[in-house]
Amino acid sequence: MSASRSVLLIIGGGIAAYKVLELIRRLKDRGIASRCILTKAGEQFVTPLSVSSLAGERCFTDLFSLTDEADIGHIQLSRSTDLLVVAPATADLIAKMANGHADDLASTALLATDKRVLIAPAMNPRMWQHPATRRNMAQLERDGILVVGPNSGAMAERGESGPGRMAEPPEILAAIELALAGEKPSTRAIGFLGRLPGRDHPPAGALAGRHVLITSGPTHEPIDPVRYIANRSSGKQGHAIAAAAAAAGARVTLVSGPVNLPDPPGVETVHVESAREMLAAVEGSLPADLAIFAAAVADWRVADAASEKMKKDGGKLPPLSLVENPDILATVAQRKNGRPGFVVGFAAETQNVIDYAKAKLARKGCDLIVANDVGGTGVMGGDANTVHLVTAEGIETWPTLPKEEVASRLVAHLARLLPAGG
Ligand SMILES: Cc1cc2nc3c(=O)[nH]c(=O)nc-3n(C[C@H](O)[C@H](O)[C@H](O)COP(=O)(O)O)c2cc1C
Image (cartoon, rainbow, N blue to C red; front, side):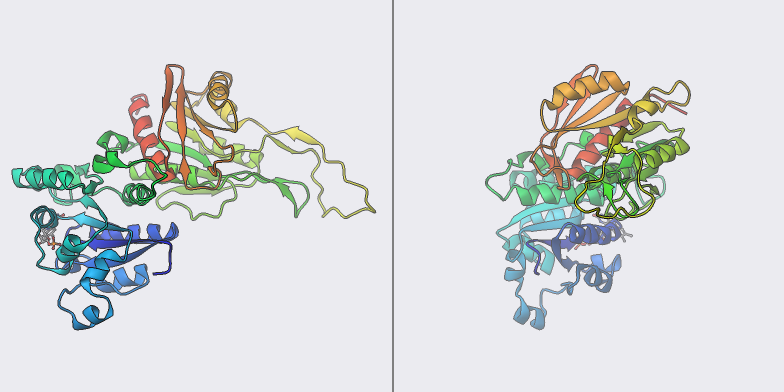
């Protein structure tokens, strides 16, 4: 494994095992290598071939394999990684962990490791609520095992619902990022990960039947056909919000400036370049129940962009005069007809973050501003964000979190604030 961060992913025998294939892909996108162990029951749900194809190396299944023991023994397997992740963590694996069993490769690795362990439980609500599972979970929490989820919602079994759905891949990814960061002494303690509070993640279907419109990324304002004015926005935060809203059951339209990111699955993505194109695409996508303007829209554009490439002219500098771009947030938030039920703006500032955000909230007529400090912190283009939620009622400050985690919390928060709608 050549990536700088790696996890040993133990895939248990539950329906949710298929979601772990998506998790492996997302981990790879974040530069986190996964080496995988598939339990015997896990093999009934996903194949070693699909797991190893996605992980980019063979998947381990057998404790008593002579070749495996010669190649990389079970002890080394459990230690040559930064974090062990069990997903789905079945009732059976949880019971084995709580009682120190070691009768297969997965449970032996879990007992032999000297690394932190994160589990994503997944099971039927009755199994989750059974006193035996409650006892086992209490033991795991005492043992310092980190837990993400489960969520509440509909089960694969017809007519069953309640707590027990495995956390979604972005949620598990966020928990992995936090757990990995927790190993660096300079970063925030991750004790609260012992249980990621359920309220920070939207319950399944929290935005079902809603249309959510999101803008993301920078805009490019042409100078001539080959040059443009841009900014450092990567679109990571806006795209993560779109993915989280879709995971919460919304119909999502994402209007994206030029970014190097794949379109989030299950999201209708409209690609634009300039601020004016973005405004047109936003207005064309209304009505919406919720609009979140996360794009870093250029405030200005070149007044008369040249239609042909500008040439050097003996040291004479071309005059570039700027004009103001339309204000997309204010235009939509102040609409008399067809204003979305709830309008959220983003404010990226390098100083006086909260004061500017409060002023922006009043000036633009939106319902909530997500303010972030982008001064020298690597937020623009980076993977983490520290945000303040500013409303007329007050300010809520969140700790520094991976952008996926900010997205998930924000969607959960907004789902609660959204006016009841039809
Ligand atoms: C169709 C089907 C789905 C299952 N889903 C789950 C599940 O979501 N969670 C769980 O704890 N067990 C589930 N089980 C039971 C486990 O597969 C079984 O307890 C198995 O022994 C777990 O082995 P493992 O923990 O080594 O992966 C399921 C069984 C079947 C047949």
